[in-house]
Each structure stands twice: as structure tokens, then as C-alpha cells.
Length: 445
Image 1 (cartoon, helix red, strand yellow):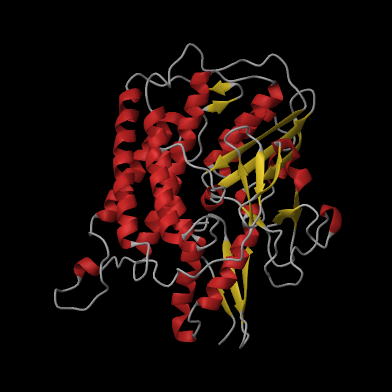
Image 2 (image 1 turned 180 degrees about the vertical axis):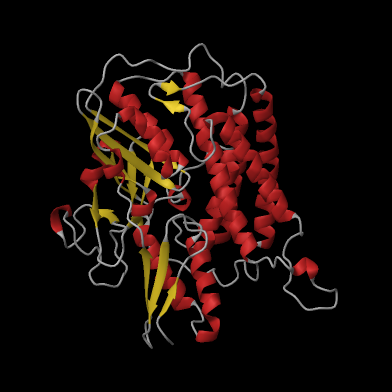
């Protein structure tokens, strides 16, 4: 075996590579983010009102959490119609994000040239109807249309502003949104049935991934009841609960010499005290650590809370029947969590895409004064994110701190990459299979 570098990796939002170093007994795999991202350098010195539009470069959800932080900074409460529109936009992006990842999983096992093969030739067995991928992309397009209606733009929305939203919806949009919600909910039901029948379980599309899992890790989620941040230990029990403004007093950030992306861990758990820069891991090679943590759909389900959406709760119970009680840390459970949350997002879209929820006498509360500190946390499609701003008296950004899923899940991706490499048939003639195994393992996180 020779040293190998896999670059680029499919389906990763960031520029990354995986480097595997030859070792007869224990190959060492490094998941490396190859490009730095310093949002503070971009945002400092700008008027704070510009941040919701600037930070969409990270993901659409950062647009919403930035507007929430401005609400606190300016001391205003958005009217109900504006809150509903923001929530509707968030659920639309959850649906889009999860549906896209499930599409990538299915398409990874689809031979695009199968339709051109002659009847007598041997080819891969097709696990789903030929036009099924087209149906998925059609509903992805519908949810993209809804995101454009609600956000003004799809991937870089601009509707959320301090105190609410920037505009009312046009009259014809209410009926169209209702149609989209009904189509998406019906298809989410069909898709969940397909995944139970063709994807999950032995001998199916995820065959060979049933035992691929990381060591148990702590997780970070946002409580639905009081809006506090909940730290859950690796056994699924609540370890700590704190207000969002305490985030960087509870979570430490460290850097390692071999990747551009820092790591997040529970405060005081590293050998490097005081949050100073240093290698996150005890060696140059990532090893299991009980103080790592992760966020995302699987982390949210690991909280063991029953879901408010009936169809999603039924799917969550099916997951428990098939895989056992939470918490879970496997690849199959992570994909199943996407299906559960896809159903939940579709149900919530159906409840929010109604004219009564998206109309009202006011779309915004105009600020009358400005504070110095603004912060907010939000459960994005990828997991919990947090923004913290400090401004001067004129509203110019002096300090900005952002905790995104890229940083929190960095340790998880490193450890999962190592597990995927160890379990893959890593031989020179199977390099493509090894890369595919890494990519499919990382995709649901």
C-alpha cells in the first residue's frame, strides 16, 4: 500500500482532502480542510446591519441567525408574521438540505449509463425506478422556488432584517406556497417508504455500512422549550444547560497543525489550558476523545425528545425499532435521521405555508435604540450555529464570533474518516471504493 491523497471529495461544502499514510497495521487518515475562512476579517468595521446579507456565504441559515442577533442588539421583537416567515424559510432550507443529501446517496449507487446498455449485457442491479432521481430533483426545485419566494433569493436570502422581514409577499404567492407544501409532504412520505424498503437494513443500498460508526460523543442542541443550549453526554444524558451567550465560556476552540479548520471541545477537556492555540489531539493523529462533540440531525434525535410532527415521530419510532434506542453514532442512523427531519420539515411547511400565518398588519418593528452586544443561536439544517457581535455606539462591528457546524463537526469528520479507511478494502486496485466509502460516510454529517 502506498500513501494516498483523495482530493476533491464529493458533496463536501468546503474544500477538503483526505490523506492516508501507509502503515501495515494501522493506516493513518487525516481529514484536512485546505482553505481558511476568517469571517471576522470580512465583517469588522462594517455597519452591523449588513451582516445578515454578508454571512449568507456560509449558508442560508446564517442569514436568519444573524437577523436574530440584530433583534437582540437593537432590543426589538419581530411581529408574529415576520417570525412565521423566518420559520417557514428555515424549514424550507431544512427540506432542501436533507433532500439534496439523500439524492446524493441514491445517485452514488446509480449507473448513469445503465439505460444505454443492451438488454443482454450485464450491469449493476437498479434498486429504484429509473425516473426516481428525476422526481427527487423536481421536488428539490419546488422547495427552491419556495425559498426564493420567502427569502427573495434562494441560496443567499435577503428578506430577514433587524426587527422582522423586509417585505410582504405578493398576493399570488400564498396559493403557490400551499401547493408546494402539499407536493413536498406527499413526496416526503413516498421517499421515507422507499428508504425503509431499499436503503436501510441488511443487503440493501447501505450494505456494508451497518457497523460503521464513531466512538460515542457528546452533542450540542438547542432546547425547544426555553431556547437554552443543551450539552448531552455520550450516553444521551443531559450534562449541562446554559443560555446561548455562555457558549464560548462552555466550548473551547483549538487548532491543529495539519488542518485549516479549528476544533471545538468541551471547555477544560484539552491538555492545552485557557483556549490557546495548540494541537487539539493528544498526537498528530486523531484518536477517540470523550470531550469531542458534534451537532446536526443525528445529534438532535439523540436528545430523545419526542417530535411534535406526527409523521416524523412515527418514523423516529421505526428507527428505534430497527436500530435500538438512542443515542446512535452510526452512518445508517445518520441517514435515517435525515429522513425523519425531512418529514418533520415537510409537515411544518404545510402548517406555515398558509395565508393566515404569512399576513399581518406589520412586517417589522423599527428599532429606536442600539445596544453593544447581540447574540443568537439557531438549529440550522446542518446543526446548531451561534453568532455573537459587539459594536460601537454607531453600530460598527468591533468584534464578531461565530460557532458554525464546520468547526464543531471537524473532530467527528476526522474520526469518521479514520473509521471508514480502516473498514475499507484498502488495496491499490480498490482505491476508488475506499474514496467512495469515505464520501458516503461523511455525507450525512
